[in-house]
Length: 303
Image 1 (cartoon, rainbow, N blue to C red):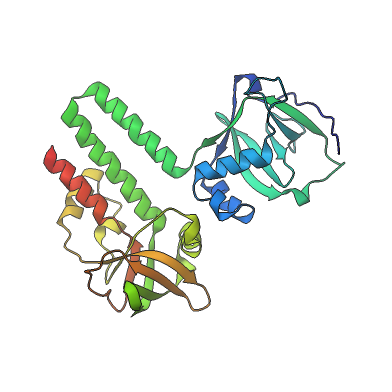
Image 2: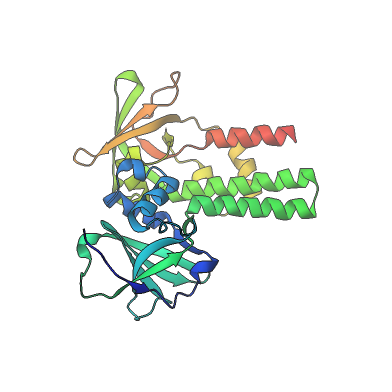
């Protein structure tokens, strides 16, 4: 048995008694894939549970339930106010101060821990992780917009505004995913298609998602000879985008990613529907959004 004695951590910008929130964003979710099992990075909720197990100690016997403990060392400035490092038995996290609290900026293996050369302390109090991924921020913005509209206008105005907010969210997802050029496609058995693609110009987050399909949420990808304006246009307002996307007649093949082979540069997709025409021999891949558009159409007609 090894026993470690730590002095109390003094000087955090946010008192632990008031509740310390450590923000977790998309970069941390990607970073965690190097240290956690796939089941621990399926979504940000499972990641926060993983970090709680790795970085936080349960309260001492008889202590309040929110008196969680973490071993910390001061940041480069020599104080805890600007930032600090959390030390776990197998994982460490670098934390920095920002305008409203603290955020985790990097995860790293505990093999890099400088035992004996860094002075460590014990922080005790209410410590929680907070989801600050882009998806969560989008949800909060939509809710804030709904709350504002509901307080200023009637029911129909609220739904009209909600349509625009959701359209904005869809457009942001399309931009974040980007477009991928494919030069050849082979139709395989069971509705699968093998696309020869160049992911060299793809968004880094998009490439990581396609290479590790088991660790991300379910997505659908469209294949078409041309990229529709609803994917590329950034000049239209959200209301104009709703009208223009509704008028599009472009037909596209839709499938779900099965995996990417970086050696052969082949991305395999499983057809999302049985009664689809084969994809064009060359064309573009982009995030499917026709289902989102149909849902918005139905809601607008119901209004």
